View 1 (cartoon, one colour):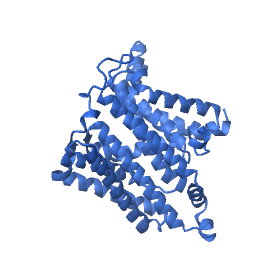
View 2 (cartoon, rainbow, N blue to C red):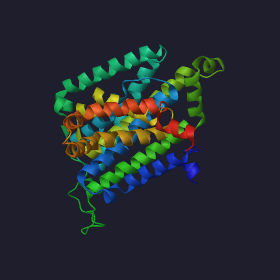
View 3 (tube, rainbow, N blue to C red):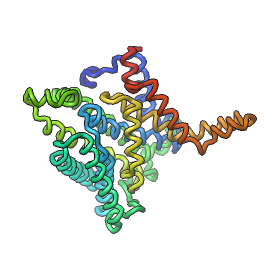
View 4 (spheres, one colour):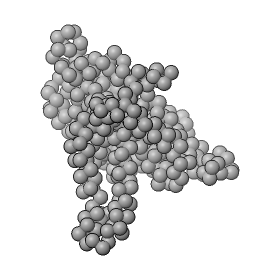
Amino acid sequence: MLTRLLSGDTPRSGLLTLLLVAVLISLAFAPFLFPGTKSLETAARICIFIVLVASYDLLLGYSGIVSFAHTMFFGIGAYGTALALSTSGPSYWSLAWGTLAGMLVAAAFALAIGLFSLRVKAIFFAMVTLAVASAFAVFVSQMSWLTGGEDGLNYKIPRELTPAFKLVQEKVFGVRINGKLLAYYLVFFASLALFLVMLRIVNSPFGRTLKAVRDNAFRAEAIGYKVVWYRTTATVLSAVMAALAGSLLAIWLRYTGPATTLSMEIMIDILLMVVIGGMGTLYGAVLGATLFILAQTYLQNLMGVAVEATSAVPLVSTLVAPERWLLWLGVLFILSVYFFPSGIVGRLRAGRA
């Protein structure tokens, strides 16, 4: 049953299985295991970024396509939901049609980019996507009457998904069962479902053909596969998944702006998560997103503790000062690439720990 649910793509490593189960249990029971607003925000971000990173791995790891437009699709999904809620009011109907509109627009953009650009060499395709994504970010910033410009959009969501809604008056295991908790579980179960759908895609005959195209496009073309069609389809599927992740972010934050969806910084974060977790394996997205966001959120706090512990040693306490957290995040990334060149999942599977 479980093997079928995972589309036959089991972790194939004892330690990897333990890590994935730990992540799943932690996210499933995050509101009860780690009470507090910050931990719930972190857990929701991890869920959303697992979908976003996995959708990018579908493109990069399984198809061999380097794209810098992934945050554009992420932003389209978020703005689709945000605009629907802003214009039609906080209803489930607005959520539904906004999400659907975001998906369709992202798919149309991806189809156009794929058909016009995937015939060129990889580096030129990457440059085209970078140009399109930059142009789109500028367009969104300039259309302030519609998108709120650099300030973004604040909007309401259905009351049942807000902290003001109380499902149960009494606390359960010390946790208040309110709309915020319902919104978290909406994000969690939607992310889990989307991840399983992507797992099904990459383990289908279509996914295996994508790998063949990635490994040797000329050979795949020679034996009759339409390489451009497969690459374009992968681009569209990846864009649709990214747009859905954007919709989940829009619901969770109740805010959508260029800094949270369209920035190049997010694109670089996605790349780092894919590399850290391991390309060409969706489980890498789980570990990469989890480790990266945890480091991003709590590294500063850990370094604050380290400063207090090493206050008697001037040079060391200066090096581990919390404001240098980006430096140490970079060091951690370099070390992870050095010791895990095929990503954490690749290393664990090779070692069969």
